[in-house]
Amino acid sequence: MADCDFTMIKLIEEFDSGFDKVTAKTCVKIIEKVRGFEDEFWTEDLKMDAQELA
Image 1 (cartoon, rainbow, N blue to C red):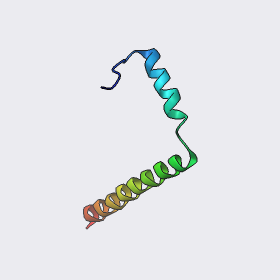
Image 2 (cartoon, rainbow, N blue to C red):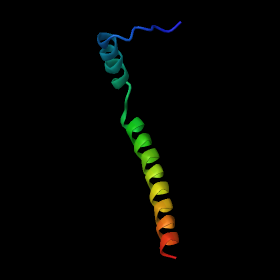
Image 3 (tube, rainbow, N blue to C red):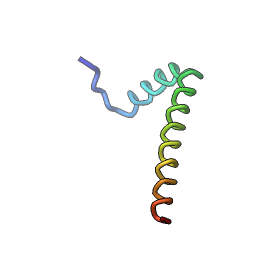
C-alpha cells in the first residue's frame, strides 16, 4: 500500500524527488498541451463574439 504520510516534511521530500524527474521533454509536452487548450479557448471565444455581433 502507498505511503500516506501527508506531513509537510514528507511533501517537501516528494517534491524534491518529483522535480528531479522533470526533463526538458516533460516541459515541452506540458507547454504543447497548454497551447492546445489556449487555442481551443480563443477559437471558441471568437465564435461566441461573432455570434453576439450577428
